[in-house]
Amino acid sequence: MIAPNDKIAVGVSGGKDSLALLVLLSAMRAYYPQPYSLTAITVDMGLGMDFSPIAELCERLEVPFTQVKTQIGPIIFDYRKEKNPCSMCAKMRRGALNNALLEQGFTKVALGHHRDDAVETFLMSLLFEGRLSCFQPVTYLDRTGVTQIRPMLYLTEGMVRRFAEEQQLPVIENRCPADKNTKRQEIKELIVTLSKTYPDLKNRVFGAMQRLPLPEWGVQREPR
Image 1: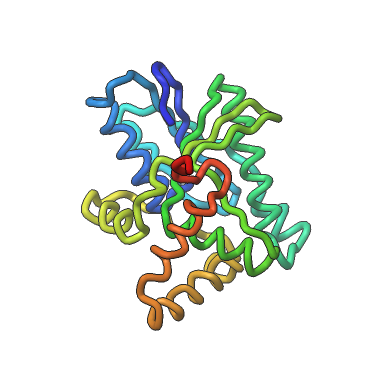
Image 2: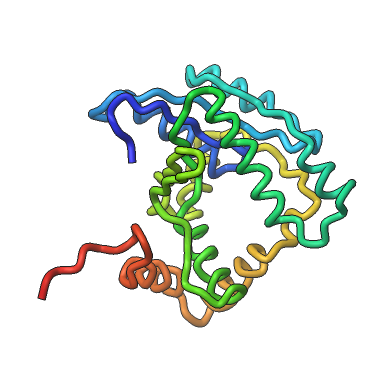
């Protein structure tokens, strides 16, 4: 995922996942065998969130911080009044982040997705779209020349949560009007319900994703 002298931007939303990723990648610079540099980029959706604690954390970590101000929130919720805002919001945030990356000369961005996110995305694709799909550990976006990496994919959400609590990371309250009322939240709740009967559900789904294999997910098959 990380090549020598990489310039890596960390997409920091203010949630526990992206903050944990930022801290881990910052600490890893001290002993990783190849040098790399970091910066943190936050896309401000215009919802009145205070990102100053993130700026202070970045200063302590000696990581440059950029806050990209947008009006994505008001456009989606006030002007367009979208009934299903998540898809459009994701595209607009991704576009704002990619523009900021290219303006600053970055071609690699680290995202804070973990194993639970992968399982949820896989099940969302299966149940809502009728296909087997998930994001990849490493994704090259040919339209922009940006490579996305997801270094925490083998960590569970519980691991990330405990780390964030132990490190007392400055998690920012999410003010999105759609928070906790999304298709992803439906899948989270479904997984919780099913896991009561099938405790190993998430491990089995994650293993299935690798054994299919999905693109860039497969364990190397031995020749017959």
